[in-house]
Image (spheres, rainbow, N blue to C red):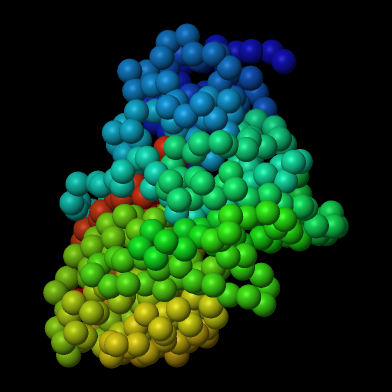
Amino acid sequence: MDQLTLQLGDRVAAGGDALGRLPDGRVVFCEGGLPGETVRIELVAQRRDFARARVVAVDGPSPERVVAPCPHARAGCGGCQWQHLAVDAQLRHKVEVVADSWRRLARMEPPGGPPPRQVDPGGYRTTLRLAVDGDGRPAYRHRHSNGTVAPDHCLVAHPLLEELISGVRLRPGRPPERPAGRGRGQRDPRAPEIGLRVGVAGGERLVVPSGGAVVVEAPVDAVVVGPKTEAHLHEDVGGRRWQVGGRSFFQSGPQAAGLLAETVSAAAGPLAASDTLVDLYAGVGLLGGVAAARAGCRLVAVESSPGAAADAAANLADLDAEVFAGEVEVWEPVPADVVIADPARSGLGRAGVAAVASTGAGRVVLVSCDPASCARDAALLRDAGYGATSMAILDLFPHTFHMEVVTAFERP
Ligand SMILES: C[S@@+](CC[C@H](N)C(=O)[O-])C[C@H]1O[C@@H](n2cnc3c(N)ncnc32)[C@H](O)[C@@H]1O
């Protein structure tokens, strides 16, 4: 394949690639490149308005470039995308990606706020979702092929989890039929996958197969969570113990959960005992639970996953709390003083913003894991009368391009 030499621009895109321009003027997303570098690239996809490329050689490296600390990342493991970028520079680029998204998509400057923060970059993950390789081992997908990388060590996995990765063997179930309409490059939801989870506080280890994967070997202490069997892990965060079901959402690890819960509580501002706090997309009740327990105020949590809603009900049982197990879109809004909303990657959208606004809350704390949906939701909230007052950017997934943005909004 032909190689091209390019001078890369000064920023990265939200998906982690450095941006450059092809001789014909099209933007090219360069995987493996860093801003300001002179690189040789190979085009891997071409569209009318843009192209995608892979960096095959770096002729003029950025001062931010480092040797990826993990040998699997150097060999193409797709688990981390940014190991070649110095850890402190990762945080700086995440901040720039958020500001750029707000300017382009919301036509707004992001508000100021506390300095960005990052969890420890090694051993922070307590949950992983992996593919299954031909030998039945849990494996990351390869960055540049349909292959997999089965890690013996994983830089970002908690030691308890790392041990579980190498102790589990699986047999893929019947090959799934390809669902109609599924295009190239989209992951088949029925491909064999394995969720591996550990509880640092409780010491539990859970194996959660999906897509027909069958567990044939696991350490004796590990519990296999099946369609009809549930198991829980436990974490200590914000001065409370949290029960988390095998399929319930939890942050990347307890340190991340603690940092996020602290940041959200600070953004929620002082709550009075007479206030009502609403926590939308509440998961196991973490963010609203930490804030409401401190204030002694009433809490209404809304969560669509039945398992996570059951965990939330158990976790919040000692508080003045009510859990609505259903979708935000069908929940009947109640009057609230403050709303916390932590939607999935697609963001609040119009329906979520309508639910937030219907509570009449004067303050909203939006937690976004995608910079584009963060900017779009900010614009929708602005149209609903909410102005952004502060923003905190957290790196809960070092060595990847993922970030968490906590934005506070107020409406007179
Ligand atoms: C990003 S997680 C946040 C969970 C929680 N705030 C935490 O920090 O642990 C989003 C949660 O929203 C739930 N969810 C997704 N769509 C939803 C909807 N339409 N209505 C209510 N909950 C939803 C998911 O099941 C998931 O638990």
